[in-house]
Length: 415
Image 1 (cartoon, rainbow, N blue to C red):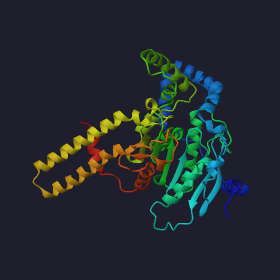
Image 2: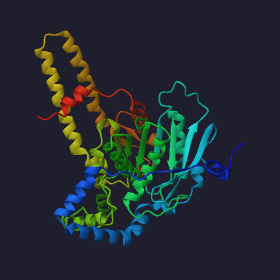
Image 3: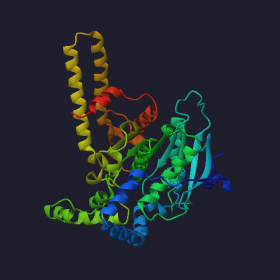
Image 4: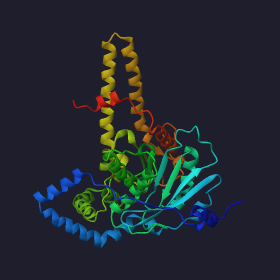
C-alpha cells in the first residue's frame, strides 16, 4: 500500500513518539590557538577594541546575515520531492542532538534493512549529509535513501539550527559549524571510529564540511570529507553575484575598493567562511572535491572552490611529473630488474593520480540550464563517469589501503 506524504513524514519523525536526545560537547580549542590569541593581545592591546567591535557587529547584524545566508530557515517541506521517496526496506531512527549552547538539532539515521551487509566492508561507515543554503533533510530524503541503499551504510541527515524542527538561531558561522561538529561528536560517543565517518557537503554545506574536517584533522581524529559545488569564501561569492561587477575595468576598480570592506564586515560579524584555507590544510588522503564545469548559476567561476584550487593542482602536478622523471631515470641508471619492476608500478600509480585531476570536473546534459542542485547521477566527467560514481569511489577507498607513503613523502620533502 502506497504511503501518503504525511504518512511518510510521520514515519520519518518516529510517529511522534519520544526520541533519543544526545548531548554534544563544546568543540575544544587547541591550546596553541589560545596561547597565540593571548600573546597577540598582550603585545597589541588595540586588538581588544576590535574584539569588542566584532562582538557588537555580531549582536546587531549576525541574525540578519544568518537569515540571508541560511535560506533554509524559511524553506518548507516540498511535496513534489516527498512524492519520489520510497521507504520500503528503510529503517529510520529519529533523534535530537542538543549542542553545547542549547540548540536542539532535529536529525535522522537511515539504514537499508532489505540488504544483507555482512560481507560489506563499508557497512560500519557513517555518511553525514550537509546540504546547501536552502536545504532541509526532509527535502534531501531521495538522496539520503539512495546513498543508504547503494553504499549499504548508515546515512545521517539533520537540520541546522533554525531550520525545520531544529531550534536556535544562527548568529555566526561558528553556530553552523557547531551544529555539524555536534553530529560527528554524537557518532564518536556511540563508538564510531573517526576513520569510518565521512561528511558530504554541497554548496554552503561544503564550506561547513571543510571547517569541521579541518577541526578534526587538527586534533588528530581525521574524518573524511567530500565537497561538491562549493565556494572559495563568502566574500568572493557575494562579489560574484553583484551584477556585472567584474566585467569592465571601472567595475574591477570598484571591486578592488569594495572587496576589503566587504571582507572586513563579514569577518567582523563572524560570517566569513574561508573554504579554500580550511580545505588545503586537511590531509590529502581524507578529502576530495568536484565542481560543475558550466551552467552552475549559483557557484560562479569567480567564487568557485575548484577554480581557487587551480594553483594547488598545478603545483601537485609538477611534483608528480618530477617524481615520474626521477623514477624513470632510476630505471635507466639501474641494471636491476627488481628496481625497474617496482618503479614501473609506482609510475603507473602516479600517472593514474595525475589523470584523476580531470575526473573532478563535471558537466550535464545541455537541456539542463542550472547544474548547481541537480542530482549527482546527472553530472558526468569527461571520462563518462558520474559524480555519484566519483563519490562512491572515494567513499569505498576511505579507511582502506593508503597510497604509496614513500612516494608521497618524497614528493612533499623540501628541495
